[in-house]
Image (cartoon, rainbow, N blue to C red):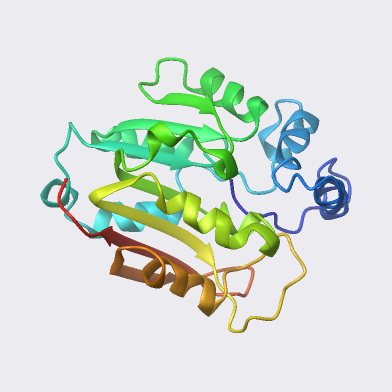
Length: 236
């Protein structure tokens, strides 16, 4: 799950369409419900998904290339969870390293799309809602990867969403977050809703996490885009 960008007015999923889906979901107090209608409207056309990329996200590629993952994780035994997997490219990239990957999205349509794109994949694709995760996932994963899912959810559920992202990380495990950030606590007009300084602080002030690695990447949208790796205290 990633953030919408400006699309041409001729596409079914242009920015006005996305805002209309957002408004309906927020009015129904179901802030994650705007994603599945968007995937359904795309009707199998990847070009109609505003956040779809060719391959894995550049921030994930950077993290993979810069970190000594075989020294950090017990590959191939290590388990990874990909949050808001979208069309599955990030999950596949992590699986190629040797992780045992579970990837979920709130959109059944997106999950089905992943399964069709990667018919022979070893990734376990499934439908789940970040705001209502299965407690059996808590503390079970050596790596949790979150790419711009948090910023796609409104501020009204931001703290709850951050806590949900942290929950599956095992003691001694790592959480990698890719997100746009904003300099103040003022509420932006989203989506996306970039993370504020206080929201970033929540990872380490409200949870047993320490920042282990960070990169800032160029962003065509203007707001800073950051990749942060946290480590959870304790041993696996």
